[in-house]
Amino acid sequence: MAKVRKAVITAAGRGTRQYPASTAVQKEMFPMVDRDGLTKPVIQIIGEEAIDSGIEEIGIITQAGEEKEYREYFRRMSNEEARAYRGKDWAILESEKLGAFGDRLHFAEQLTPEGFGHAVYQAKKFVGDEPFLLLLGDHIYISDIKDRCARQLIKVHEQYMLDAVTGVQPTVERLLHLFGTIKGQPIDANKGIYKAELIIEKPSIELAREKLVTPMLPAGNYLSHFGMHVFSPRIFDSLEFLIQNNLREKGEIQLTAAQEHLRQNTEKYWAVITQGQRYDTGIPYGLMETQLALALNGIHRTEICEAIARILAMQVKN
Image 1: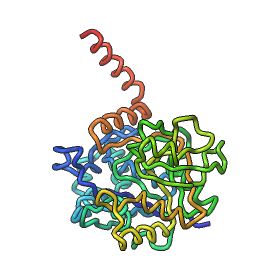
Image 2: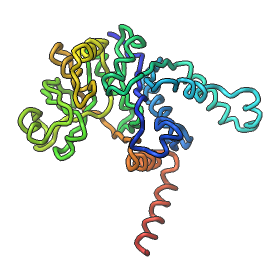
Image 3: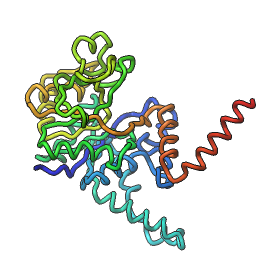
Image 4: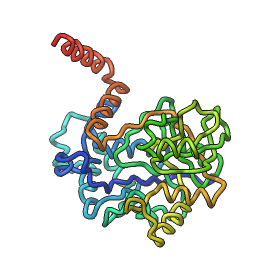
């Protein structure tokens, strides 16, 4: 059984949907208050999802020249900096955690914006011959159960020795234009495990009704991408096939096309309904929604609920 001990986080997007703030700081470094009450950048929260799921090394795909900014953040305090936090033991502890986080990091650059699949391909050297967890650099995940969302996928991948497992969630057809979608054949529907039989990026409702219906799902629901995957290195063969043959969609090398190519060449591509919620910090509304979700699932839940009640009361009054 191949242990999943590496993760790749794609963070090379230009952040255009978060303009103008993304011109001051990359969107992966936007600060958010996490469930533990600490203020962290988005990518740290995502990285902790991976580490808490058993990941030992993390590869971050960046734009050119951004490694320095990450290295500057993910480090231990200097002695001079630590003096400013004298008596604040919690801060010193967090500094040690940042340093330990930084020790796990590796970097690869996507020099030209050629799509999500192209970004993932830059991790080939880092991944080597091991399976890996793939996470988006602007998605935060909150599990509905004890296991982290990423851990749920890793367990299935390791147990069944798969070439790929994609996290999915039942999604109503009016939202399919937002997600890659998988037709699944039930392996163990009670556990939400399916064999992938077709993968299409952002299908129309008509195409989904024709080709992507999964047995045992409610009518009008489909298995759409949750935003995380576990892949064997074979995904790089599929990405290389697309790149060498210049097979692009809307001018870009798409990961979904590589997923479908891999699926056609293996019997071991599965999809798992992930018990949790995903939140997209890459858009303004999503950033607000993410912070609210973190707050309602964190140590300040009571205070936040009271604050929301006050705000709503004022809205009604006004």
